[in-house]
Length: 526
Image 1 (cartoon, helix red, strand yellow):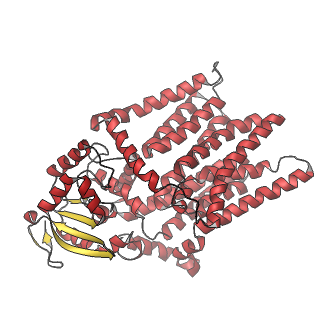
Image 2: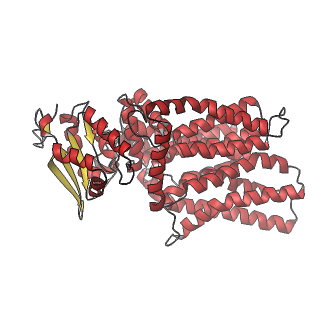
Image 3: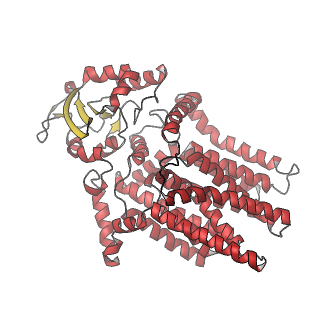
């Protein structure tokens, strides 16, 4: 009962902090917001627009908007609530591993203070739930729990494909270490049941993909995008500040040290060694695979994504330091464990800029003003291209366009945005054209990719294009059909400099105009 009460308080505090400190979703968050908007308009990932492997991420936001209303306010509430739920689940996982609410709260502190980006809320929930799920399974293996692990892995896969892979590997380790009592093959049959359940549960999605355009093209697009991202985000150690270096070290140290401790316990024949292996080794594996898959440049954005499992292992290591040891060893182990934990919490606070986040939330102005701050945030999020909620310099410059969009762009009209400006369709509240929320050079290599984009454009009414130069020029060379479509149909009607040669151009197809906007003088299409 006490743990549940603490979890509720923690969830409420974390959710409130995340909502009150919000100063605009970053542009990466708008990638899945734009997908959610397409789904609200009746389109489906892979069938109607390109999805690189996150259908349920779009679907979650779309479902929330369908219930609570369109717009960034709903997404802000969803995001904040998810961070709160993740903190509560992390607390439960920490208590399950250590038996201590205090240590569970320490794991939560690391997760919260490092302040993951807003779009990382699914990762926090998935990896907290993943750690708790494998510990839960190890406590009492059963066929029902094997199927539950499989269902969770498939759900993580639909949130984003790599999450499903990482969770699935940890689940497989958990089942192999804690096979069903009836498993005479020492884990093989239990693992087969897990894999069979995963295949059965993911099969409808694979059939859907095949019908929507093919499983293989879906994989090829995801791999092409990954190939573009990996070189650009390769982790470099040069110039990293001390707090980032420590957190990087600690994130890898925690699973390695936990593995060493479990090995020592097994070698020494400790009474709880087998139980620790069954409960902790799957969490170690989850931490290692998530670290390998997610930690890259920029470290302050990517490292928080992988912090949940290492934080849980760190508090478990602190708990192990309180095992009965000879006095000299016990003192050294306990001091070292607590010092590492405290240093990690401190560095997480530096990376997450805790003081700045509290200031953004308005908590330094007194608790009496907090209710008013909730109302202020809600008001800001109704027009998120104005003021502190604007996600980018481009969005701030495009404020006149977003106001114009409400007046002059038809509900069924689409925006062509040949570049990486995912916030533009969302803030304009209009669907993106061509089935592409962004057009990155190198991501659309094949003739089939080009054909599919052009085929979709021919079916759509596209009165406006938002082009960012000079980044568009490289795409134009690679995708001449798209460049011909734009140059033949559209003419510039506005432009906004972003510094140096970086400029956004608004282009219009005058043949679709029905009048002229009185405020801007631009063509009106409704």
